[in-house]
Length: 548
Image (cartoon, rainbow, N blue to C red; front, top):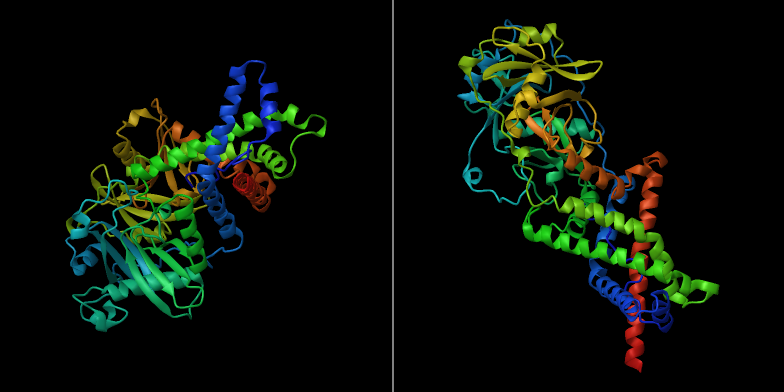
């Protein structure tokens, strides 16, 4: 989406015409210098149109894949979220404590914990970050930053009893040191994928753990690691599961994958290099800037020559006339597409490192002195997790209210921390921004996407921490995971607004998405039409010269 539709604007590749050149001389005034400047501008416009012909057509046609995907190749999950059902009434008498589960798991420390269901049983899912040879290698500095992707998981059933080891796993034959094997981790991913897809019958072709973005699961999805579950059916339905939260990360199929591949390679030019590589960014910057110059020059030429070319119905007809008339219609949209694309591309030299922020986790069994199961019953919690607030471990109890999802914080002494979620978000925001707490001018919990936190950011709910510094810094924190979901300044907000309005035409949302996309499609096809008319004029001009 770096530059949607730069195109050959009004008079691309137009052959020299006696009446046009005469008009240039007349409207430019009586000075030879003015006439020369306009003639030079016309030559520049034509040459730019020739150079930009293929890039512009590629941008335009690939840009149409977005409305195509949205209206004709939509891959929708049957469900997009798990029901926020309170956990069953667990007690110390009938359920294992988290502390005991960690001891059984074999992990010395854990970084993530939640209660998950598999079949009719409940398990502690214990997650631990780890290093691998691949993880310790330097990752390309030009790649999009991502959350730490290297995790291993252990599943311990809440109804585990040492005297009855068969209860430790869904399939006891795969038990290894009282831990579920990778097969059982995949069983959990499969159960979630079937839930979200609404498909309990189709066989599973493969389940793969992704620790980095690839050609089909790109950085736009924001989440790592994920489990990729491919169904063995005609459409190749693929569901991506976030194992850290159990949430749906993405859903796709073969047709959608093809269209998105076209978009990435013909629109954002991912084939050139990594997303933030200076070569890729510089090439796109240059071509978009030239497109902007071409569009402005065409608009200027048409404005200057209009009266002389079309007074009393005179002026060259045919393709040249249609080219100019269509050009004036698409000139402003073209300039809008180019300026917004250039605005976004120019910010891509530096990766957004805040996405890779690592919260301070690493909890030992000695720290987990409070069993939170009793509190889950009194608070109607649907999930538990852990956070380190002010250096101390706290239980997070995820609950649901009329306002949306909320998180309560319990100390290991059993005390409820008032405003704990805001405190935790502030702690993370201060760490990633380098700004102090007294610089904060406002905090807010967001349960929906908005102008400064668009849907592309993926994660909800988040805490918005706004600072009163000169840049107007704001940080969006997903406190359940301790990850930074977004970060920007006032300048970033203006760039996003520019892109939303002139590249995605959000100002037409009042017409409805279908009508808005029809308007955009018509304008984009108009740009392609002007390009092709200019090309036909160029070919005819060359042919005539050859014939002479």
